[in-house]
Image 1 (tube, rainbow, N blue to C red):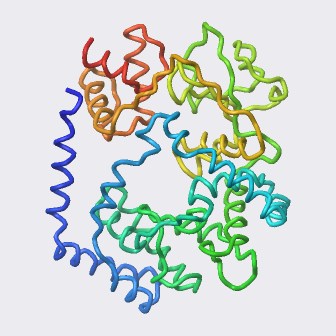
Image 2: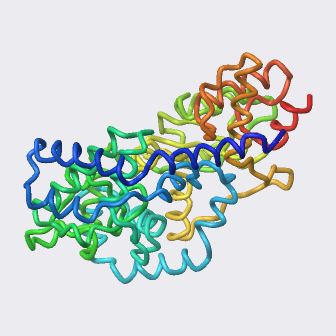
Image 3: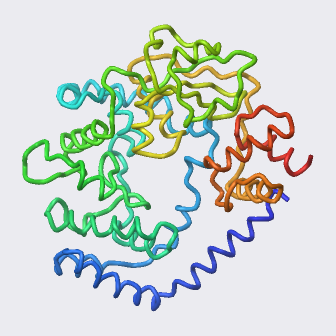
Length: 392
């Protein structure tokens, strides 16, 4: 039962490949090219952009298996934050201290936060992506799951070319369209990009001042609270109601203290705090604050946001995450989460249409199932829950 959906996924991929014959793609591109000119993009930029366009089926496959959502939190953290990553980040903090101090002074975003983003996004600029961005964005717009979003990103990419920030031939990045040292999407570049070195270009690919200032500008305008933390690991009382552990439930730290949550007292003045269990009720427990929401604005993965916070703490010597021995370490695959969602729906717990990603609807459906079966209501799609669901 655990792998019945696998064949359906492969079949869907094959159907996409069959339906995406070059002739059909070319016809679709012709209409998109016309729309691009209507968007006010120069004919020269449109012509050179579409001249190099080609379909990238691998991009669709990557869109269906984002590692932020199918790895366990602890496995994700282990893969992304290694001793070498920490050591390199600390060295770069020193190397670029003057620049980073200036950025922090202007925007209020700590330099170790910026370097943590830099490390996680591109390994400190070491790999900014090698996929042709126009082709990737066209493929994702054609594929249809988020067609409008990627269509608009393509238009913005061409606007960046029109503004002479970078020629289209050099527009390479991630499969999802992100680019440069900090992996900005084209729309983010246009809205928040800063020409910090005053050379007439916003060069997030090669200019560290432009990259850091642009990233800090984004975070500041997204609501970064100066001199406030991102998160802290906490301990829960034995009688804690795990239904209260969710990103959308916010209380003041004082209220959490009243409920028995063990929080360091120097955080007691903070508000807008949530409890997260990224690896279930047996895993580490975090209290997150408003700046966590800002990181989530950058990337909607909870695992990613915790990783940014954790790496930033490592860079300034804060202790590592404490982990109990009885935490479940195995992860469900994309296909297993898809099957779990379908089973929950079948049993009357509304997880929504299966998509392989354990989002908020799936978490709430799991909590309903856990309540019915007198299990800890942590909303976590664990292997033990999967077994309970399919082998009650």
